[in-house]
Image (cartoon, rainbow, N blue to C red):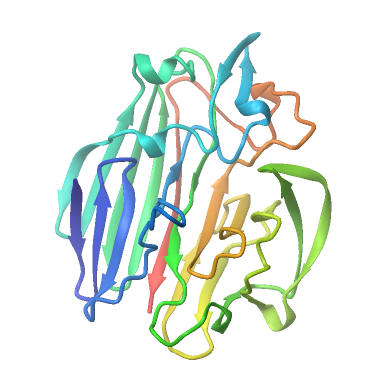
Length: 288
C-alpha cells in the first residue's frame, strides 16, 4: 500500500513494504523514480539496513556465532508501520522481532521520515539501539531514477555533475570490493553515462569524497540533485549494459572486501551504537 505526500510542485508515493520511495512526479506527471520493471531491476529505491552491500559468503560472525544475511540486509523486504502522516510528510518504523533476530541478534527501532518542501524531498534515518549491549549496523539509500527522463532522449545524453574532476574509486568483484583502488576521471566535473560505465558493477567512492551529485541532461533542463554532506561512502550504479535507469547511493557502511574475515565487529564502515543511543542521518533529493 502506498502513502501519498504532496507539495505545490511534486507528488510523492512511499510504500509500506520497505518504506520504499516508489514515485516522484511533477505537476506535468513526469516520473523521476525508476519504474521497477521486473525484467530489468524490480526495485525503486530500497533502504539498506542493517548492512550495506554484500557480505563475503553472505554471512558474518558475532560473538563466535555465525549468521546469514543477503546483500543490503532485510529491511527493504519487510513491512513498516506508518506512525505519522501529514500533507507533506510521513514517517515509517520497523522494530526488531523474533524473525529479524534469527539473522541479526540486536533489538532496534528503525524509523524513516520523508519531508517534501517545494522541489526537495528530504529523507531522515533514525536508528535506536534497544539492546543492552552495543549495536553493530550500517544504513544506506539506493534511489533509482528513470534515465532518460524524456522521450527522444538517450542514456548517453546524461551525465553526473560531480564536485571534482578526479576521484579514487573501488571496483567490485561479484559484489565484493577489490583490494586496489583506481582513478576515475570526470573532465570538467562531468562523468557521462554510457552502456559500459557499469560493466564492473557499481562505482564505489570511499572516504567522504562526495557530498553532492547531480544527474543532468545535455538536451533538457530536467535534473536530480542528491545532497548527502557527511556520509562516508557513496555508490553510482546501474545494471551492466542497461540504458534505462541509474542509482545515486549515499551509504553509512560498505560491502566486504574479497578478503574480509567476516567478523561483524571488525567490518569496515560498521557503526557501533551504544545501548539506548540513536544514530541520525539524512539526505535530500531536489528535482527540476
